[in-house]
Length: 345
Image 1 (cartoon, one colour):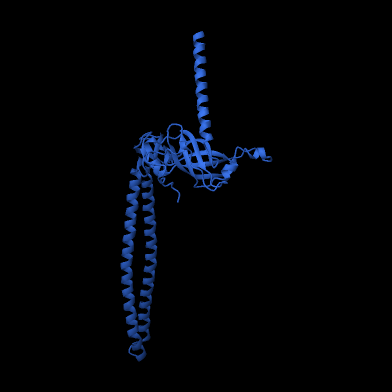
Image 2 (image 1 turned 180 degrees about the vertical axis):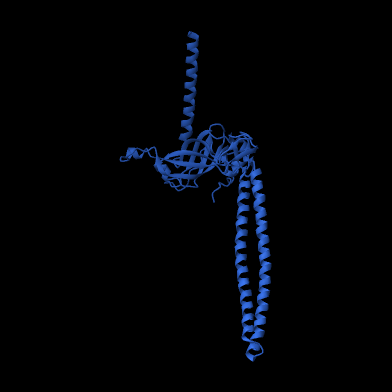
């Protein structure tokens, strides 16, 4: 019993000493941080995207597993489309029929136009003969009636053609609608990411909006930190930053991509200077996409670290150099090289 107690005390002392050593190292590192560089604790984060069915149906194939790295546009799952294929064939047949009816009506219009032309010519030949007395007025009336009938038939044919063209448009819309359903039956990755959860299996019948995967978006990797109001006021979108993770030796170049317009951790009524000092603003520091893409296999969300941000408005004219522990960049970058595109235009 005494040995167990001694061992527990020894382990506790080792833990305390280790924490003190780490704390002292941390204090030394922070003491070396210039006043125009703010910093805050955070962890690597990425947004999650739910891959869901747009329409109800049965899953025919699931082509990805948990942990898989998938690229934008990669097929993840396929829904059964047998019924939709039949609807598409029917819609296409109706479209072909509508187009054939239009062609037929165009031919009829051409015929009606010829009949009208002939009727006009005959009417024009009869008019001078009636005036000279060679033909009677009844002959003129007959030719006029034939011309009017031909003209009405042509007008009716043009109206039918317009109606048939509307039918073609409706049939094309039906084909497009069914084809959209079929296209939506193929679930693809909207971005490059990693499958976090696989929530459905082959053969399952899902309702509209049923979840199949949850995907971690690896195209937008960032760390969120909280800065007091004074430092947040001196920070702007696009400001240069560095992220120092606990698990790697080098610093990661980054850029401020978001500053919250509203403070957090505030009391209900902010009246005194002391209370105002407690105001904190959420700041998002984004790692350049080009750098992330070079290390996709190593990217892990939840890893903790510290983000260092160069303040954009400070008393000194020349910005301070980055502390020594923030100058060791990833292997493919040198401190004097241009950093990868941050993704902001």
